[in-house]
Image 1 (tube, rainbow, N blue to C red):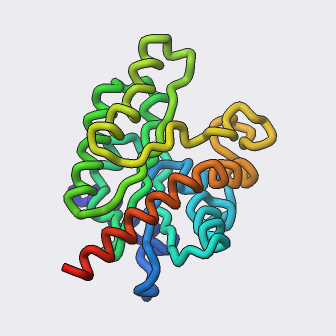
Image 2: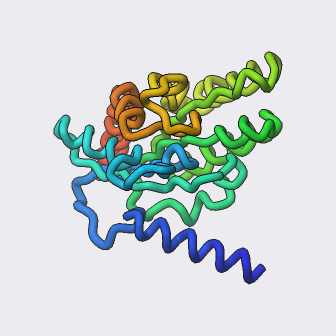
Amino acid sequence: MKRHIVQMVLAATALFMLGLYPAEADQQETVIVAFGDSLTAGYGLPRYQSFPVQLQAALKERGAKVRVVNAGVSGDTVNAGLKRLNWSLPPNADAVIVELGANDALQGLPPKEAKRALAEIIEQLQAKDLKVLLAGMVAPRNMGKDYVEEFAAIYPDLAARYDVILYPFFLEGAALNLGLMLPDGIHPNGKGVAKIVENMLPQVEELLAQAKKESQEEKTE
């Protein structure tokens, strides 16, 4: 138990250092939490090349008043993400990009369990009135046809069930492109992250619009 508490404290400290809990935030900024695994955290990359940093820069270039905070933890499965969800969200969060499942697929964990945990994550976020963008993942083809198909169905099924924005495949445009991936072939390099951000921008801007609408409706109530 003590060890678990220490791990939570260390993780929270790391997230603070990454800017998840900024001391002051512009009240006009929309705060998006990028909640995921190593693909979100920026494994093997300098901080400025990570997904949250590049996404924030791209959105600001397009005139958005936004802060994207990094709540990615390398190695997280969906269940691991679920366990840390509540203490990973800053109190001023407006929306969340959920990017989880890659480690479940790589480890061959049951798709039904990943789907159950993702559903619970979405339910908890919606209970907090947070808008959600669900980023999908695909399983390695060597897992077999049945596993690959069952895993692929998780994300569109949940997006339809909970009426959240779906980005079908987080690594779209980067996966299998050697020039956009790190030598491990699993994680994108800085250019790969830039491609992911470019491809995902329409869905993220839709997420921003939903969050702004929610905020305006709350102010008029």
